[in-house]
Image (cartoon, rainbow, N blue to C red; front, side, top):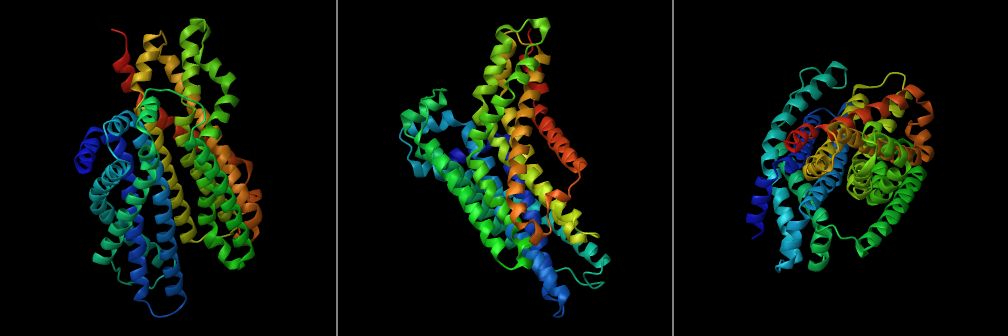
Length: 439
């Protein structure tokens, strides 16, 4: 049963699984290129170049696996939440929790299979560019042969299988554990106050943030030269806590921007009225759903600020530092864009409801802009807080102090995140407006 349901779900929601597919492709690209550099380094004579390339390849592989599980779990969790009614019906007719989990895991695997050859092919190209760039900067001997082949393909395949299955199982946890009656109530929009899942999520957020603080302290007490290598993993540990606390952060951001939202959604020519109040009610009701976008936005901000601070502390950044900055920023930006597009694409019924209640197209657009501003402010604040929590104790050892960043860098990062959020949020809206336009 699970395999058939998984295939039907992938065919019925190509847009949702396109986000998972793109993340898996990027994972395969990075793993293929990193393993290729590891194999290339193994053919070099013992020395500093061999050790540096091997350390770099291994580091990229570890961080990529960690990022992949983290991001895929977020994107798959959103995909599972979008079909809450289907899962509720399955649970009501007797589907067991393990069947729900296996269905979601099968969906992730079916998405990973076509992502492997695409990612491997692009990874081979990236490995060649990587090798040529390092040779041009004197980090590799000229003419060193690039080692790709089956080991890289198998490594990328293994990473995709592991990350897709872990991400899928984590995403399916809540849907599988829900009781049939509760699942049907949630799918119908019923709210019964705090749930056991919400309490567990809050406790998990506290534990994750405490674990991040402990990991930060351990890294600070360790060898100074290793602090920079551990910095991405420490950042991700804190971001797990941000992800679990996302609904709380989202609701707080919505409350802080309540007045601007009302001003944007209630132009004088309409005199406020039901349409404006309905638009604002959508903002409040969607606070939990919008929180799904907070974690990838915070991921973009935290990694970008920390990496830019590290680059600012170096007079002549190496080719490897620049490459790592672009790589991590691209991974995080892709995750944020995927999540925001998926959130916006599923809301065509809400657009139709707003239009039927008398809201104009401009008002709907302003509502989405206000939502994007809410996500940007909350995500930027959470990401900046994580970056400060990590760089204050580790900045000197890792060479990444946020105090080195000029105000223009902060402003530019905020503007870039706002642009990304706006583009991804508004992308599906023209189609929704055309379908919901009055006859």
